Amino acid sequence: MLSHAVAGHRAELAEEPFNRFPAGLAEHLRPLTEDIRREVVSAIVTGIPEYARPTNAAYTTTISTGVELGLNLLLDRLTAPGVSAREIFDIYHAIGRGEAREGRSLDSFQGALRIAARITWRTVSALAGRDALPRQELALLGEAALVHLDEIAAATSAGFAEAQSRLADEPRRRRLRLLDMLTDEQPPTAQAIAALAGAARWPVPSRIAVAVVDHQWEQEESRPILPPDLLVRFDRKPTRVVVPDPDGPGRSRAVEAALRGHRAALGPAVPLTEGARSLRWALDALALARRGVLPGRGLVRCADHLTTLLLFQDEALVDELGARHLGPLERMPRPYRDRLAETLLSWLQCSRNASEVAVRLGIHPQTVRYRLRRLDELFGARLQQPDACFEMELALRLRQLR
Image (cartoon, rainbow, N blue to C red; front, side):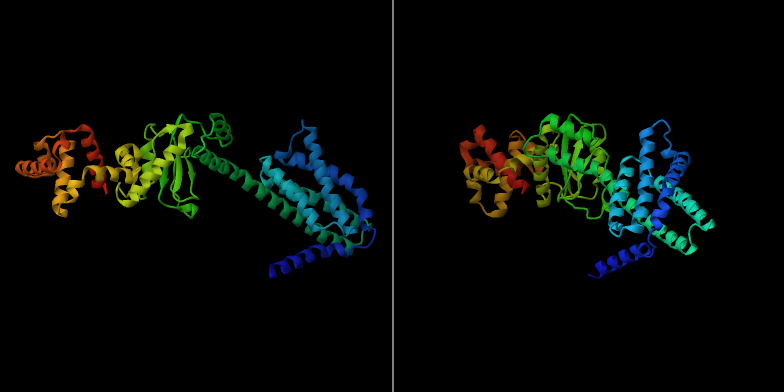
């Protein structure tokens, strides 16, 4: 409520100089506007390089119209209470946006305002010197002109800043939309990707990988510095990163260095339209890293852990294999059961070579042979069946990883 009252008070103060002019003053000054306009336009196009386009008549006409508009609005405010600061703001807010879109700095426009103010004041002051305008009215006119120029400058600055913000933000918004498109479960077409990538100024690669980071950066200044061609979505947890050409020289190391100190996972390299698959695998790997199944710090590469990811795609299914094939172990006491399970997995992995099992487990070969005899008693002919051994190995691997 207080801010509205303050804003209202400021608006009243801004309008106040325009309410003290004698009737007829504006019409007395209006015949001067044409001469002022010509002189101001000439001074602007010769004095401000960005507006100097002698071969572009349309551009000069635009400047001329803008100067005439500013002068007429000032005079209208002296005679017509209906012309408000709000209207001034809307007009020059739009002009400010146009300046930004044209790629000019606001310094040029403000310089043009100063030229217009100087020439207008010089012309009007000459009237006072010839006693054609009372000095008291000259003072009021000067105050009103300053208010008018202040409002023009403020409105133009606001429009310029708004447009600049939008122009600066648009590539970022397009890159976010592109990231979402590339990781959507509904595969985008190559044409759709190319169109949005062109608008986002993103070179289209042949393959991508998606990384996820178990962190959300609230403050922009604390975010990691990533290579500029990576697409990043910091506003989600986990943070998502699309890595173009992930198998390129040094690419993986650059990503790992940027994310050092954070738990992260990098999905496999996939064709451009299959980013959702890379994202799914990366999320699976990150979940396993949280559980401690995969390394809990640094960048985990899915390509290095494909077997683990496969086993954990459906744990219940692999558990069913364990229930089907490892029942005899479950009847053993816990410490002994674990030693036999470890020996059986190593034996299956070492091509049934007892000596290699002894080296891998760091135990005496005689101990290995004793355990293998016990396993033969428990499982019998199943240890000679390739399919059964394969399924036992899967279940034992899952058990070990857990």
